[in-house]
Length: 305
Length: 286
Image (spheres, each protein chain N blue to C red):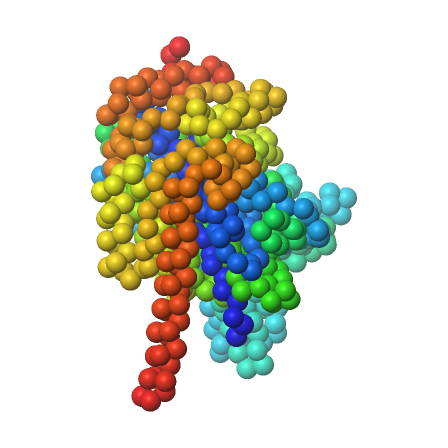
C-alpha cells in the first residue's frame, strides 16, 4: 500500500461549496495532486487556471446505428430494444440508445454498426498549486462514472510518480454512479454541507454511502449563520454517527467575489475566512493522524484473537 | 405539457423554483422529483404519500443445469455483468443494464429473469398538486431506470413540473427527454456560467426551448446576462439575494406561503414562461 492520502470532497446536495473548498485546500495542503472528478460540470479550472500539458480523448461505450442500405426492414431490432431507442421507422435515437449492442449483435442482415463513441476529453495540467488532472465530458454524453475512474487513476499515477503525499479530489454531487466511482481506493471523504433541511437530508445519504464503502467521513458546515439551529443539529448528528466534525464556515459573499476574480479564498483579502480554513485543515490532519494511530494500535490486538 | 427545471450547477435553486411554481399555479399540476439521488422536493412540499412501491429492475440468473457454457451471454453483454467460467456462469447484477441480450442469445434457455431492488417510487398529493418522486437506494448506480419509472407517472394532458438533478450527463438527459420547455436556474458567477453553458448545450442537443431564472442576481458579475443576450436566451426571472428567503428555505418552509414577494415572483415567472417560452401553449391567462 502506498502512503498517498486521497481526500474526496463531496456534498450530496449541489452548490454547498465543494469547489471553493477544494480551491482553499489546494492552497493549504503540501505536496499534492489535484483532481476534478465532477466531470459533467467541472469548475475547479476556473479557480486554478490550468496550463494544459497533455490532452487525451475519452471513449466511453458504443452507440448503435442502422445502415439503411443494408437494412431489410424486418423490424426485429424494434422489438428487442428495451430502451425505446429504435423508432418504428427503424431509426436509432442516440440519446435513448443505452449502448447494450443487442440490436447490433442479433441483426440477421448485419445492418447495424456499433462504433465506439467519443464522450469527452481529459487533461493533465500545471497550476500554481501543483498538477491538476481534469476532464470535460461531451454535451449530453454518458459514462461519467468511467471518466471519473480514469481521472482519479491518472491523479494517483501522477502522485506516485512524483512522490506526492496528497490527492485532493473535487467530487460530483449526488450519490449515484459518478460519486460511487469517486470513492473506490479513496482514503477519506470530506462532506461540505449547508444548514438547510435539504442540506442535512442529502448529507445523511452521502455519508451513509461513504460508510458503506468503509471510508472515514469528515463534515464541514458552510453558510452556518443562515440557520444556526440546523448547523448545530448537523454537528450533533455527526457526533452521534462518529463522523469527524471540522467546524462551521459563515455565509460570506467574498467566496463569490474571489471566484469572480478567479482566485481561491486563500488568495483573497479575507483573513477571517482564511483563519477558519486553516483551522479546518489542521483539525482534519489531526483527526486523520488519530484514526491512523487507532488503526495501527488495533492491528496487533486483532492478531491476538 | 412537461416543464422541467434544470441547472447544470447544483444549489442554484431548482427545487425552490419547482415547488413554489407548482404552488403558485391556479390549475392542478403534477410535480415530479427526478433527482433520485438526492430528492428534496418532498421536504418542502410535504405531500401526503399515498403509495410507496419498490422499484426493481430485471437482471439475469442462470439455470446452471440447463447451461451449456457456450459463452454467448458473456459475449453479448457490454457491461461485464456475466462471466462464463469453465464450470459455471457468474452474474454481476449491479453491473447489469437490463437489456435482455443474454436471455435473447442463450440457445439453451438457461437465462431466466431475476429482480434487483434499485429504489423506491412514491406518489402522493398536497391539495391540488399531485406528487411523484423516486429514491435511489444508497449504494446503487442505476439512476436512469428509476428516473424513467418516475416519468412513467406523467399524464401528458396534465401540466407536469419536473425537478431535475444537477449536472449534464445521463440522469439529466433522461429527465429532460420529452420536455416541452426547460427552465434553467443559474447564478451570475463563473461557476454558474460555465455550468449554464453546458446545460444550454444539452437542451439544444435535445431541441427543447429553454429560458433562464437568474438567482442571487446581485451577487457576482454580468457575464451570465451578457451570455443570455448573445445566445438569445430569454431571462424569465431575476431574483436578488434575500437573507430572509434563505432562512425560510433553510427551515423547509414554503416561500410563496411565507413571503408575499415570492408569490409575485412566481406569478412573474408564469407570465414570462407563457410569453417567451410557450407562446403557443397557454398555461396562464396574460
